[in-house]
Length: 113
Length: 248
Image (cartoon, rainbow over all chains, first blue to last red; front, side, top):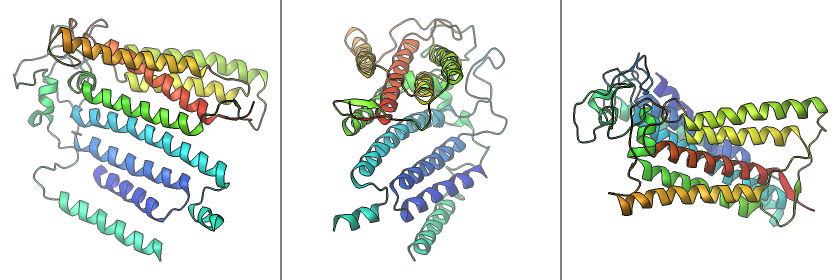
């Protein structure tokens, strides 16, 4: 069930990317899309009643029913790269605002003509 | 018009994804994933060649990969080269932010309010607690949830707290840059030592120790400390670039 919610989040993010003309809203939509994708990848490895994939004194051997650790490791990478792209996008948005005084891409075009 | 078209496109795409996943034998329902039938079981049993040994917390010694946290074993040991690339991406993005927003003379961006004494002192007290929690998370990355990336982000968040609660506060961006460069270079040097003195790039050449102890897992705690320092100083630098502007 969570997987359908994740797909819905991805589609909401894509819709936001398609209709928005505001730079900040575009970056936010990209983040929503990315969060949806991350939830989807994580949910592929989930097992009902599974234990977090860490050996502790309570769950102390490799025969315990862990959830799949590989999607979690991949998503850890994806989150960090998402932070990097968001920071770069926001820096570009700050420069656009400093130059044109607006975040709206349509207004920038009108101002140039 | 544009909204209706986009809505239709998005709905069709979402339905296509759901239809293509439905009934696909490789795609399991939510909550039915069997890690035992997947490649992940080799990471859990610490034997990529498919061996069937049992791993015990506090007992097993000198495994193929030593951390008790299996996600750390994948991120910082089996896929450590991938993590080096990830750190490089973060470095390039912080470099891009510095190029786009950096100016020769910077001054602190004005806040809308002037913080009073209580806010300044209280946030300084919280700063130490958040910083120490970040350091703890970095150092225990191979035993508990967390590691270099969350810990580094916590260190950066303590710097952000000081920036937001004090309108005079500035960090020394240059020392952050030095710290970041040293940590990143040491990570590569650690990998090259493995390549030339031992078998391959980023090989875990130290003793793995007993699984579950603080001093175990070979080079993984060292790698995570380096990653934590690098991520913390990079994100602090990004925060500083966003909160300064041109001016004397």
